[in-house]
Image (cartoon, helix red, strand yellow):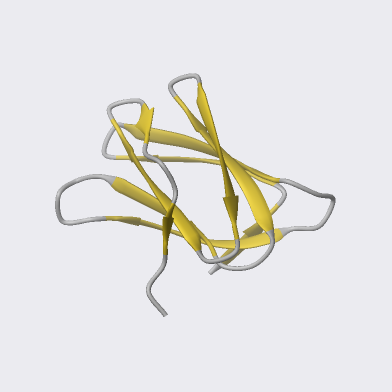
Length: 79
């Protein structure tokens, strides 16, 4: 996992900005899924993911998909 306070990820023309919700760095994972969507998961803490003007808040154990400038609703990671 990567820890950050603020970062941008660009993959396969998918861009997401990730910002920690507090002052501490937040561990997260980013990967391109087989369907081409960029998945961003927060592993501990809280963060905001922004793409295409939409911002979604994530808590520990949640993920979103980024595709064509859209951010999905948060989903729970499998244990």
